[in-house]
Image 1: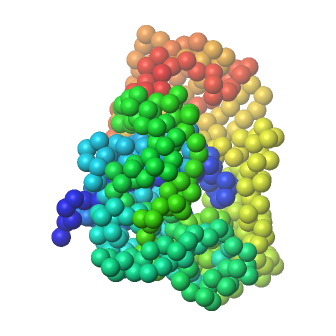
Image 2: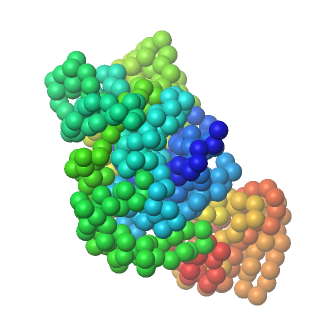
Image 3: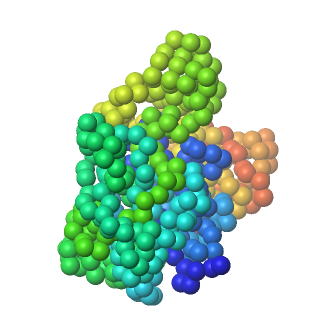
Amino acid sequence: MTRDPQIVPVILSGGAGQRLWPLSRQQYPKQFLKLNGEESMLQDTLRRLGGDDFSAALFVCNDEHRFLVAEQARAIGHRPRAIVLEPDGRNTAPAAALAALILAADDPDTLMLLAPSDHVIENTDAFLDAVDAAVPAAAEGRFVTFGIRPDRAATGYGYIKAGAPLPDAPACETISHFAEKPDRATAERYLAEGGYFWNSGIFLFRAGAYLDALGALRPDILEACRASVAAGRNDIDFFRPDPDAFAACPSQSIDYAVMEHTDLGAIVPVDMGWNDLGSWDALWHIGERDADGNVTSGDVITQGASNSYLHSSGPLLAAVGIEDVLLIATPDAVLAVARDQVDAVKDVVSTLKTSGRTEHLHHDRVHRPWGWYQSLDLGERFQVKHLMVKPGAGLSLQSHQHRAEHWVVVSGTARVTRGEEVLTLCENQSTYLPAGTIHSLENPGDAPLRVIEVQTGNYLGEDDIVRYEDRYGRT
């Protein structure tokens, strides 16, 4: 039976791609990766929230991920209610405020389920039952979070101490207090004492109630977000809050801004196979282990290895005689780290940033709204790329000042604009684009177009581009 009104999933899709580097990168963080099945974590989240009790999702993401969000939703047949482009990352309280302002403009009683896009929930039925149990309390103006029953003394999560059951919603309990990430001894005490739950970071509340609470507790956040939405604009399929107004917004989590200070907080305890995949070791915990305790993914062979996580998305990975180690190999980077040192991975990413490298930003395969390109070789005054253009898609009408390009069609059909000419090229045909030539590449067919591009010139940077026309609004 469909609930009336339906709940609006508000899916938070941010992230800097640090803790699961090198598979996760700044331009392609973990929610877009297939880490726990055949679909990405974002798509898993959409599937989970795609039943009759939910309306179309509202996304809050950053600008550089907008086409990834739109494409991954389209790929599974989901048309979002809105994709809101957060001008800068300001944590969860402002992100929720942007969504609440948009939803409350239609109906302040709208129930919004605030959910990260990068969590694993293995027992969907238990999760949906918990949401259903939370509805009466949220409809009455409470802010309901979902507490995960701990199965170990974890030190990487915040904890919530539950209080007494709510009379009108017996599956919900009041919140006694929040506890920061504990040390090992404290976590063991929480587990032995009982009544403590991991903080899942998933919330259900009325849009108008959240705005009222934020106005009372953090009016600076509310006013900055309100001004940003009021001065925002639509851009193709996206909504852009005004960046100047949003710049005045403080960065604050919803826990600190509202949940720890309100008398209307509530918690639904639930055992739903939850994991936030906050580290590579978390993937070892949820993975299917062999007889030696190893979790393997990709082209991997082991000999005398034990209790390790071994992943390759590129070359053959052979692990011999290692124990309690995480080995992750991608085409352009390899990470080897002891399982008890996974928190240090973010320090590696910081080192990459400060040293001027690019491996923290993107993979060798870089996704674009029209498809992707992959660098095959790079040398002095030349670069070779593999381009894949999706059916019906096309690159912008553009020119380059410092480089010439040679295009060879490997498969599919290409429509090439070259100055005043328009050419149709098929497999094994090619064209040459001198530096300064205005050009574009389109795929008019119904199969992917694959092109080998050879660049030559004295500067080959991605910023050597002038766009004249672009169907994706990037001019």
